[in-house]
Amino acid sequence: MNQFAEAPSLFLDDDVVAVPSLAKGRVPSYMRDHRKRLRERFLNSGPGAVPDYELLELVLFRAIPRQDVKPLGRALIDHFGSFNGVLSASSHQLKEVKGVGDAVIVELKIVEAAAHRLAQSKVIKRRVVSSWDALLDYCHTVMAHRDTEQFRILFLDTKNVLIADEEQAQGTLDHVPVYPREVVKRALELNAASIILVHNHPSGDPTPSDADIVMTGKIEEAAQALGITVHDHLIIGKSCELSFRASGLL
Image (cartoon, rainbow, N blue to C red; front, side):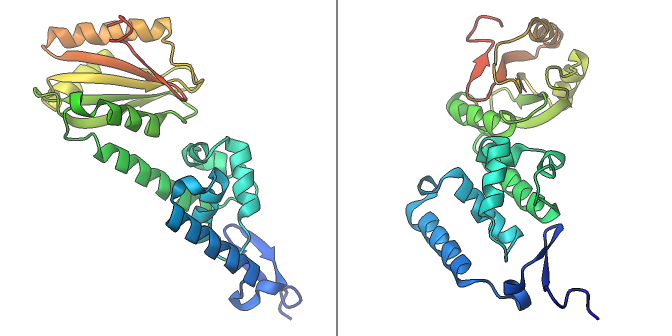
C-alpha cells in the first residue's frame, strides 16, 4: 500500500508537508486570491506599497508554489530583522529557520546577486567623482548587512574611472587580514592609478579601530612608493559610513 495514500503529501522545499487539500497540485482559492492581490498591489503601486514580509512573500512564491508562505516570511524577518538582512544571511544561517531549504535559499540568493549587480552597474566604468552617492549605495548594498568583516578595493584609472572592484579578504566578526604588499601588487597588475579601500563593521558602528588606522597608513605608504594614490578608506556600518579622508585620517 502507498504509505502516503491517507494523507497526500507535497515535497515543498526540503520538507514533506502533509496537506490533503493540495493533492494533485490543487491550490486553495484563498491562497490564489491572496497571491494575485499581492502581485497586483506590487505592480500597480510599486515596492513601497508592500512591507518587508510581503516583499519576501513575493520571492517565496516561486520557491514554494503550493504552500502559504506568509508564516515563513514573517519568521525570516523576525529572525534577521529586515528584508535586506534575510538576503544577506548565509545559506547556513538561513537553514536555521524552520521551513527553509535549498529552493528557498536559491531564490533568495538570486535576488541578492541581482541587487549587487544592479548596484555595481551604476558605478563600474564611471568616474567616482560624479557617481559618489551611487558608490556609497553600492558599498552598503554588498557589505552593510554582512555578519563578518570583508575588505574590498576599488581600482581607478588616471581619470578616476572605476575599472575594477574586488574582494581582497574575508575575516571574522571584528577582524579581517589585509596585506599591503598584496594590495599594491594587484593595483599594479590592473594598471590602476589610484585605489579606494572599503571594509565593513558588522557591529554597525563605522568608527575605525586603531588597527584600521595603522593598516591604512601601511597601505598608503606602500602605494605612494609606487606612485599609486589612496583616495580614501571607507568603513561601512549598518546605516552610515565613515570616510578616512573626510575625517582627516588620510
